[in-house]
Image 1 (tube, rainbow, N blue to C red):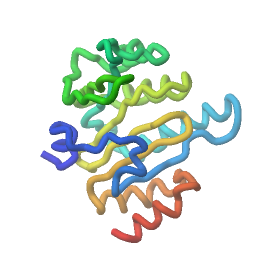
Image 2: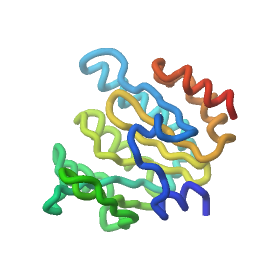
Image 3: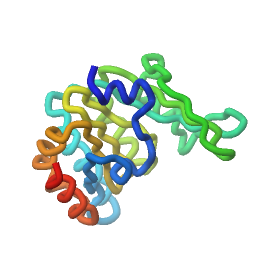
Length: 193
């Protein structure tokens, strides 16, 4: 069992957002470039280009998502989040892996995981997320390459690594996509490995 899989399953993965600033080995890439319709189209095409680099064999070991609940135990339904997830991830194949108490406004977050997700599902989720400009908080993992890929919104995505070797390998492949604002910090991480 890979270190990443173990951390996801035992709940020790640090889910604190933004992932780039809260994890030691992380990359941050820019998605939305331009304005208007061009901006959204670029965001989607760049997200898929990054996903193709990360999952070049089209093998996604797991997808996991977060569902937030209010103090009365009702699921938050941000922009029909539940319907969107139902349409793109088969919930009957998902397993609850963690429940965490938050605060008074958001009483809990439940995290679900689904294994062996096909690439078409990833494309559908990202298309819906970016075009509808919602954040369904769905992330995709490769246990072989030890990373999690998460589009945080139409502006960008974070990729968290659990291996310095894999971080360096993908740093070179993804460098053209780096968010300029964080480029220097990413380079410092690369040089420290």
